Length: 348
Image (tube, rainbow, N blue to C red; front, side, top):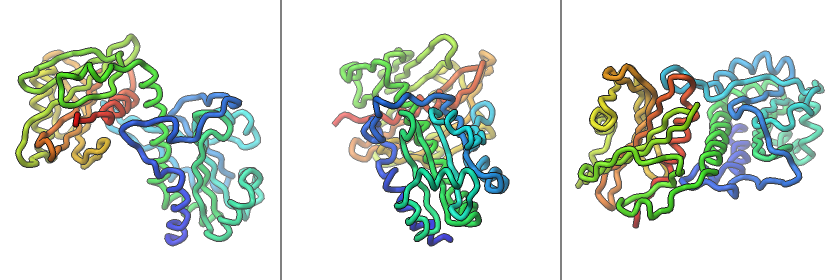
C-alpha cells in the first residue's frame, strides 16, 4: 500500500507544487470563472461526502486529521467536519470546502456520483495505481476547494485516508491561509516608502497604525483595532549579530524581554507555550506560540513569534504577533498576522 500511496502522491504534487510563498496571488490557483458564483459558507467548515460504510470507519480519522487544534487561550480547531448527503448535492455546490471519499468497486451513491463526474482517465489511473488523491479548485464556484480521495476498494480507501492524513490537512490549511491572505490584502497597503527608515519592509494594510517605535533599540510595532474584531499587534525587532546565535532559547528570552518592556509587562510561562523549528517565507528559524498574560492589567491573549538569522547582513530578526480578544476566537487573527509577517523582506 505504501508504494501505491507514493505513486499517487506525484499527482497531488502537480496541483500543489507552487507551495506557500511570501507573495501570494490569484495566478497560483485556478483562475476564476466569471460565469460561476462565489463560494460561500464558513471558511473553516468542510463538507464530507462518503457512503455509509466508508463514513463509519473513516469518520474518526477524518476528525483526527482535520479537526486539529492550535493552542490560543483555549484549543481552537482549524476545521469542523460536517457530513453531507450526496442526494442533496445541488445544495452544496457553492460551499467553500468539499471532500469526497469513494471506492470504485462500489455502486453506493457517493461512489456512483464520483465515477460519473471523474471521467475515464481518472478511472484508468485508479485501476492502475489502486489509489489517488485529486485536489481541484473552483469546480462549481469561485474560491472553492474540492478534494477527492479515491481508491479501487474500500479497504484501500480507508488506508489512504489514514496514510495521507497530513497531506489532506495541509491542503485544506493552505486554502484557509489563501482565503485569509486575499481578505487581508483587499485593504489598501502602505507604500514601500512608509518603511524608508528601516532596512526591511512589509506588505502592511492601512488598517494597521504605528503603535510604538524605539529606533535606538530597533523595535517597532503596529496595531489594528476595529470594533467587534480582535486587537492585532505586529512588531519587528532586529539585532546585529556576528555569528548565528538564534535558537529556541534566544527566541524565548528575547520575546519575554520585548513583551515586558514594550507591552506594559506582558509575560508568558513555560506551560503555556510551544517551540518548534519553522520557515517564515524564505527564512528558516524558530516559532514560539502560546498564551500571554498581564497581571498588571488582569488581561491575556495569544501570541506567536518568529526568529531567524540573516547571514548576509549579520542580523537577527524577531517578528512578533499578538492578539487580544476576550470575546471570541483568535485563530483567524493569528493567521492574518502570520500572512502579513510572511511578506517581510530585507532591502537589498
